[in-house]
Image 1 (cartoon, helix red, strand yellow):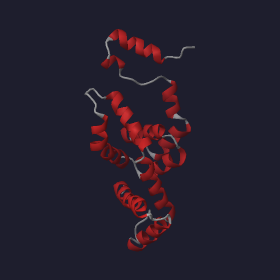
Image 2: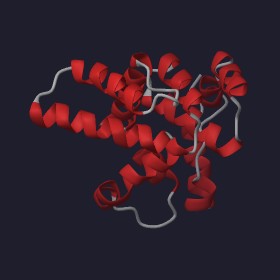
Image 3: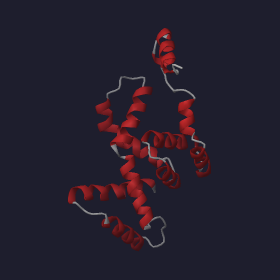
Image 4: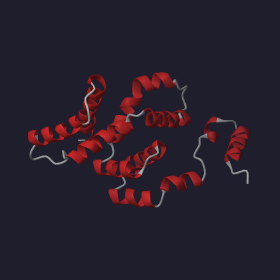
Length: 176
C-alpha cells in the first residue's frame, strides 16, 4: 500500500511540475479514488495531502543527501556518490519507506522536520520493528537527540589504523 501511495502521488507531483496543475488536483484525486474504490479506506482529502507530503519530503534532495551521507560513512567499498545517486538512491528510498507502516509515516511527518531525524526514526522502525506506540514513545523521549548526545556513531576502528582511529574519536569528544 505504501508503494501504491508513492506511485500515485509521484505521478501527480510530476504532472503538477510538467503541466502546471494546481493544488485542486489533489482534492479531485481524493474524490476520484474514493469513487473508484468505495470499500477501501485511506483516500480522504487529508490522507491524500499527507501522501503528497510523504512523497515530496522523502524524495527531496535534503532527505536523499542525508541518506547518501550515511551510506558514504559506513561503506567499506569505494563509493561513487554520483553513480549511487543516479542508479540506486530512489530505489533505496522506496524500499525504506515501504518497510514502515503508513501510520508510522504519518506520525514522523507530523512531528519531525529534520531529514536526518526522519531518516533515523524510519531506519530504526524498519530495523527493530517498532510498533506505532513504541515509535511515539521514542519520539517523546527524543531518541534521536539522545543518540547524538551519547556520542557519534562511527566506523573509525574498522577503517582507520589504530592510532588514527583513537585521534579521530578524540576529536569528536567535547573540548570542554
